[in-house]
Image (cartoon, rainbow, N blue to C red; front, side, top):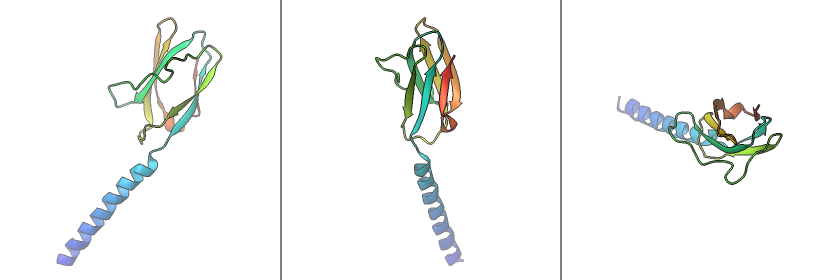
Length: 111
């Protein structure tokens, strides 16, 4: 009985360590192409995990994405979550938002 408890505790410890390592292995950098095929200039672009109440920093910073231009988006926040909210602010002040699975995303197009 004592040996069984000892083995059970060891198994739980190994399982916990495996789960922790799996989470670290799954954390990855995500890169996708953002295409602006709309008629407006994209002046601000924010993204954050879908379960977050706050937006991360403006990805464009001082840059803009003119109609017909494309850019590369890099998400390297170390999170393992795939569902992200996107917020686009256009030159006329219009805001567009979407929720996407960035782990399966090769490109995102504004039209």
